[in-house]
Image (cartoon, rainbow, N blue to C red; front, side, top):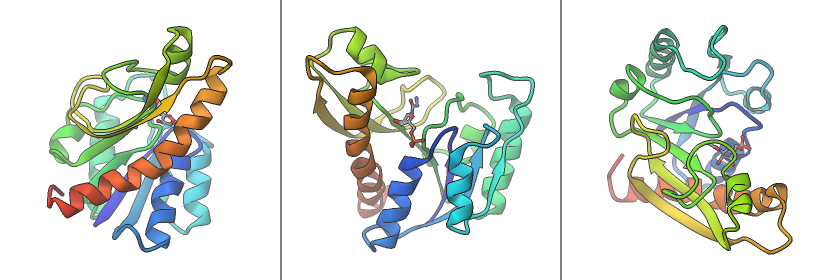
Length: 192
Ligand code: GAR
């Protein structure tokens, strides 16, 4: 299975997938890494591992993922022979035509127990809401914001003295375990 990764940040979730592949616990290959953020560390990580990586040009669009850029992304993923697309800290909403190019083949990891706290900085939302529990979710991507069918979730406690940063760090430990596990689950159930 050839995975294409889309990310806007440090790429620690991509690293977790790479580590699982390296450890022989996930039968896959990361074929292409794309980022909408110039200089994002995820691009550097990809280069460090000899994985083709490049920027998606979203200049002029602060948050939106323009249709031309989605088409360019879909074309690049297809050209790299990707069968699965994993969003790993990708901060733009995927819509048509990218969704149509990979039906039921785009996954996302979100740092909360969806449907709770969709959107940005979910760890901060959880602390500010006074939640006593949060976690992370791997789900299929649909046209909504963090609304697609859930594949797996992992819970973590929110402690009384948590800051958004300390909660995010606890969630990320679970994310790094959960993302490879979710891909493995889909493979074993022949859903990929
Ligand atoms: C992760 O916590 C991921 O769940 C979150 O961004 C972080 C990226 O970290 N994604 C979202 O909030 C998407 N709505 P990483 O770049 O180190 O994998």
